[in-house]
Image (tube, rainbow, N blue to C red; front, side, top):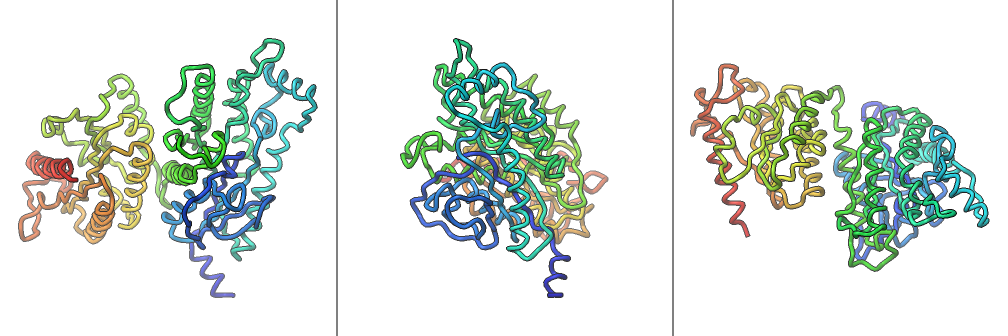
Length: 501
């Protein structure tokens, strides 16, 4: 017993991630292949109506025992990242909405549209208790935490993030009218207010004011919306979901429309046609977005917020054409003044920012980098991580998360990772630099569209000694001669990539 106690005290807390919502959070994906069991990921689902309420991650944690929800892909990715125990806590019920079922105290009284809808339902004999499922959700999260503690034999469980995945039952009211008044449209218009209030109240009830939250986009029908009233309603609803992320801190929208599988016929369209592939991919992207939203290593901070707002303003004023080449990362690339001349076949945009660490390159990518929709990203980041005392595995893992998130958002975009420089300024930690480069190179070898470029061969003589003519007086930043050498290596890598089968 003492050994177990000491092991728990010495380890990180077990992260607990909540997946909440309605039927799509339950999950109606029907797998057509065997899915492995992951014992290190514990799923707990209080009040589950079909099967066990706690156990290892496997197929069958969906709405029925032959189905999966987003928890499978989510748990897979979190297991890969944490490399230790993880808890996924589900709380979900089909057919529920935010304007009534999940309504929380801060939402206030019904507005005109909600009052008309409630009166209509009561006249038709549908009686509901406003906010009943918000209260039940709070209770189930607290109950699930206690169940997981007992199951794992540990007290050090920590709420690390929440995925809110639902929307159909508010969206699908769009055609409803009462005495000629479009109250269904009013439900959509009120959605951002109601969801913001509910998520704020949920944080308050759980006593985690800064709990990171991912809102899963309602991706039904995919990215091509019909030019009809139904298409208008779906666009308006997705806009309302995105609006919430601008109202709440530590909250981000995870797109899912790109994972729509129009060929699957395993369930209804409101359940993504029952496509297990869609549910797995959505679960993975929820995990990636959550890790990018809250990527801070222990003891570190997040900088450069004002810099990023400046870059975003610049991009709105002077948007680059899609399909260009973008430099991303820290000052080694920010100071590459002649990058546009070095890559004349591309429209070059330099979005690198001085002092960037890999967690900032990951966190800010969604709102600054991805919106430019480049065909190619030149990535240089990790030098400042080394200075901050980070280990090689963490640096490489954050690049992997960046790469995987990019693949979900922009699957055709290629990345060339420029090797972290063995600069004289980092001589005492070259072992970390070398290991981080090795890990990233190994990862790139297994991935299409990912290339490791060994920039250090430009900075060193054949015997491995440093070429001082490549460095400025700070023994860190580079001369024009170094950038000329970088350009030759990267141009060759771009040619090789274009000729690859």
